[in-house]
Image 1 (cartoon, rainbow, N blue to C red):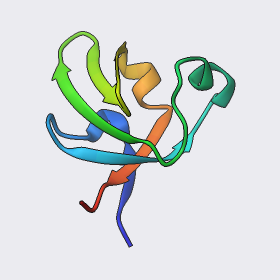
Image 2 (image 1 turned 90 degrees about the vertical axis):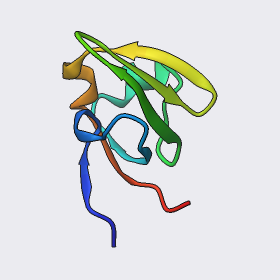
Image 3 (image 1 turned 45 degrees about the vertical axis):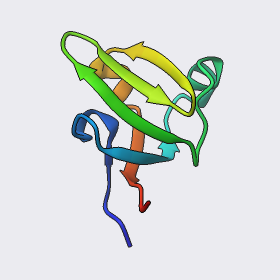
Image 4 (image 1 turned 45 degrees about the horizontal axis):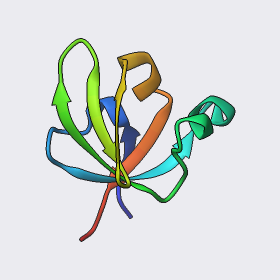
Length: 73
């Protein structure tokens, strides 16, 4: 079983899978759902992440509301 952790802890370039969402209504507006793959592309004041085929910019507060596990590819 893979360890589950917050998206803000995923390393740049590492592929994760979304397993849990807090505030699902807000996150669904962004097109993020459980089971989707996620990659952190850039980390600064805000993080650039790719979720599925979309790239979005999220702050650390939002990243902490998303829990992931490392994807087994």
